[in-house]
Image 1 (cartoon, rainbow, N blue to C red):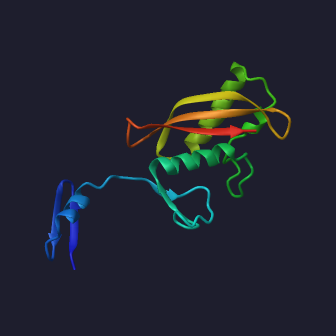
Image 2: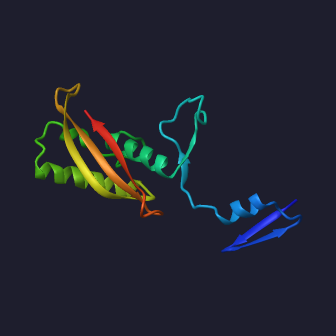
Image 3: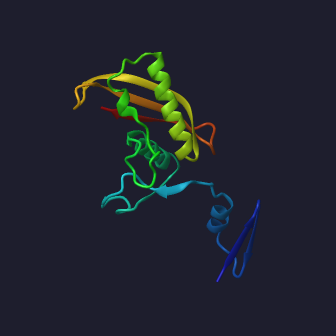
Length: 159
């Protein structure tokens, strides 16, 4: 039995000596965020019902879920989500954009951990939705808290 203890840059090994790969992987481990992948369901190719995702994929799934959920829709979390569908029949002017921005930022900073918003874009679409109104496309440029250089986009269509 081998016990590997890591403190800072120093790796102590008790028992038999490990190979080079064990020493290298234990000293260069990256701090990642792990969580349940979205959407939950059977996928025979990747991870089954409850697949594990990390970092960008985890944040991207959580943000899509947050933006597409209406407040009051989730049991036990009545304030979870954004009420973006209420903006479908309003003109997309500066006042409406400020309300959308406030709604998204409030929900985002209450429920998403590990990322921050760098840019928020709201665009009307030409596609008429089921209710007869013009849809919205929300594009968030996000930055992971652990890595300042990596910026990624999450795009959600609301109709």
